Length: 179
Image (cartoon, rainbow, N blue to C red; front, side, top):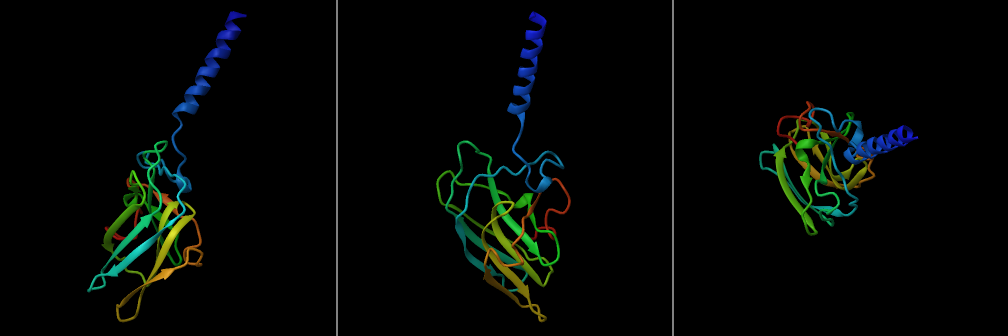
């Protein structure tokens, strides 16, 4: 009887250890690859892109945005970022673009990066694989001019989940140092 009770107790301890050490779920099936980086998320559904400015030479874009959310004491490592939506390719949320929430709302961020050499690109502030807070569309004309315009979050270009690509893996962006 004692052996049976000991086996049950050992099984319970093992089960609790497995549950207690489980990390946050990986987004898009790829988190946890390439060094174990994961995208820890919290519910955050409001905010906006406040400004979008293309450099004079048309090579880089500065985006400024805010989220009406703050860090959660329950998930202090939670992050948000941006999703890249190319017209005919998979949408990605690059790990190098993930940022921590501010401790008090709003969370405000501004970033400048090179524009990839594509004719049509959507960029959205994302807080989860399928949560787009606000988006812009970046288009290039035949003469190399760049136009940035507000884009609804349900536009066909961006109305799809992003796949989280950890920093340690290849393919984390559309080009080195790009959005």
